[in-house]
Each structure stands twice: as structure tokens, then as C-alpha cells.
Image 1 (cartoon, one colour):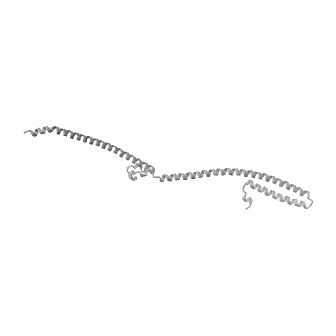
Image 2 (cartoon, rainbow, N blue to C red):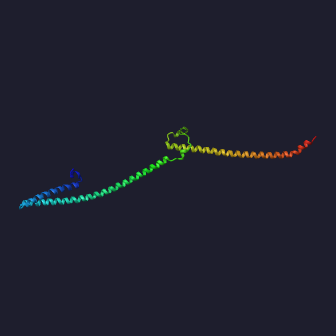
Length: 210
């Protein structure tokens, strides 16, 4: 593959073309100079050598200009490439941070999914039984259904706790009533003993009567 096919940038292509042209002009000038060395050069030959020299100098001057332009373009390209590389490096760093954050979030999600939540240990009624009692939750998703079941369990436990408190109050009242009645019976026994003691003299008189 030739250089012309490898290089596609317009500025560099112009440099190559001008360089080839200057080389051809230099070769032609060398041939003319060799002819002039063989004998006394004619005026036409000297004029042609002068013409070829001017064309070569023009081509060299043009080549220098193209070379300077190519160097400037190369520096500009390096600057742009460096800026683009910095942008790519910055984007790559952001991408790596996103990957790190993604892995961190995936780890947190896995930890949450494997966490032994207390609500999973609650003795909730089966889903089928709950839906039979509350058909308005049939279309709920998993989270909404679990929340509704927990609320139902809380309401049931609050109702049972209220019943327990009421039964405890009734129990305390019955205990108090039983104690009062026990005290009343004890007082009655004491009064009865006093009554018997007071009636003994009368009973003795009845026993002594003919």
C-alpha cells in the first residue's frame, strides 16, 4: 500500500504532492546541470536552469509553508485529542463510579431481601382466609397485601387486648366481691357466736325448769 493511500488528511496529502513535485523538479535540475558540465552551456540551457531553479525554490517555499501548516494542525490535533482524552477519562471514571454504586446498591438490595424481618414471623392468618374476609384487597400487590394483613393482625390484637383488659377488670371486681362476701360471712360467724354465748343463760334456765 502506497503512502498516498495511507494518508487521507488533506493538508498532509498536499505536503506529499508538493514534496513529489519538488523532487521531480530537483531531478530535472540535476540533469540540466549535468548537461551544462559537459561543455559551454548555451543561453537557452542557462535560461532553462534558471527557470527550473525558480520553480524549485517556489516549490520548496510552498513546501515549507505546508510543513508549518501541518505542524500547526498537528499541534491543534494533539490539543483536541488531549482534551477529548480527558473527557473520555472523566466519563470512564464516572462510569466506574456508576458501576461501583450499582454493585453497592445490588448488595444492599440482596441484604434487604435476605434480612429476617420480624413481620415474617408474625402468626398472620393465611392469605386465602384474609382475602375471603376482605375481598377489597384481591387486586393489591404483594406489598400492599402484606401491609393490609399486618394492619388486620394489629386490629385483631388490639381488640383481644381490649377484651383481656375488660375481663381483667371483671376478675378484679369478682375478687373484690368474693372478699367482701367472705368478710361478711366471717362477721356473721362472729355475731352468731356472740348470740350463742348470750343465749346460754336462757338455755340453762329452760333446762332447769320443771
